[in-house]
Length: 265
Image (cartoon, rainbow, N blue to C red; front, side):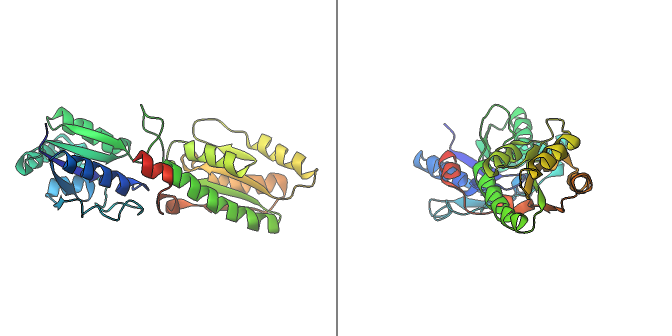
């Protein structure tokens, strides 16, 4: 059995990462293992930036967003030299394995490090929910709830001004946040990278609905589509409805994790 493990969070932060760090740390300590936290992801591994972890280290963090271990992206770890340097650092610290909490890039790094001889376990932590072989990633539920709350507020002002609001949500190249949030807020249309879309059809639907007396509209767009400004401009030109774009951005990564994210973590 492993006697000493490291924990790191890597890539974009996600609500629930702290809950995952806490769970891994306490589970390992209960089994008599020594635990170190590796700060700032793979950068911290390469630089030897580690802290000893105890039950007190992770006390009071289950409800906090972000990650107490900090996080970063590490281009150097994408190289063979970087991975081998990481292996050497693990051996210097006497680590029997590493638990990596992060997204697909973090998992690729863990796979490379594992292939080099350092056992790794990956916990899927990303708001994008785009990790293969799992239906759910830590942070996804919180991000959806945050986006829904923000869009509900945007609806209030759109309704007051007879506007169409085009709202861009995160998710990188995946449309999971957009699809589920769009359903939850009753959007007129949801545009994702995975599916083709027809702006003419969307505008025609809006115009048809306007004849029934509807004066405000919501269009949810996944960031991976990359055409939020174009979509906004086109809708206004074709329908005559004042149309505003809102990019929700990094607010979706923050905040206290939901019950589901805490329990899953």
